[in-house]
Image (cartoon, rainbow, N blue to C red):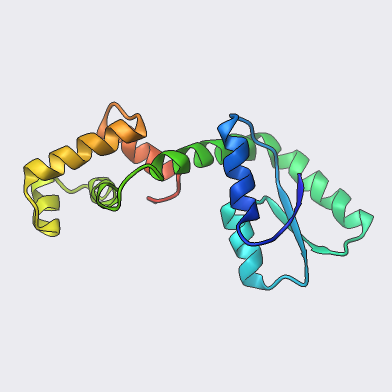
Length: 151
């Protein structure tokens, strides 16, 4: 899919196609884009970026690159989009707890760090796992990794 890059359109398109469980490689384009705009489009999910106007050879070269990497990239991008959609359901506190759980801290240590009780942390963890559809903490961490929140 070739999309003219305007504010947030790449992320919006990816979110829309992810709702249907599909993935299509997205190539963004714009006239005289600045580096930050290109980086934002790629981080949002575009697989390539072309500067308009572009020659036929440029499009063909981009298509050739996509063909070589499409299947693996598509699966990874779909998992990432689905994971980000799940993560967006979390409250700020639940995200904070997820980050700290992913860094290996116990409920007690998280509670100390956030200055709340370990029981409250348990409640946040349970709510976080339910919203993510995760049966175990390890699944929640995997979802965070797929959303590229945790490295």
